[in-house]
Length: 135
Image: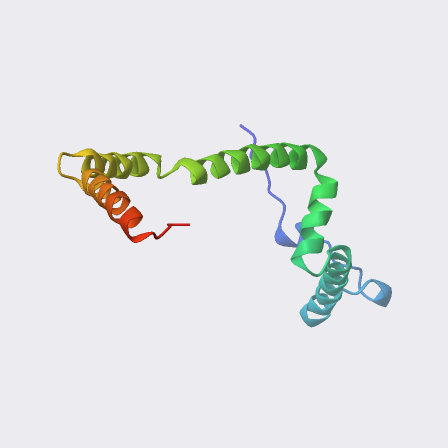
């Protein structure tokens, strides 16, 4: 059975040869500065590409997503029409119940309609005697 030899740490680590100053490894502080500069450039690029206010962003999104925008527009039109219908007819049950109660009170025996008929008849009988017109 053969024993495999694993490489040592010095064989894995790729270090520049001694005396070759052109290939020095940057220190951590220098690496962070390079990363920081690169992140600043990326942020500046992203900020320049996006509109500042929400209306401009929404417009830009609608331009870039035409299919989705069209579907959303159709859905909003249908939803708006249904909402308008619902607003117009949401109290229909209540209104019908109130109308029925009012009609019952007006048409009941001895109710408001009979009282109004008596007032009208009395007025017709008394006004011609006094020579007064209602117009």
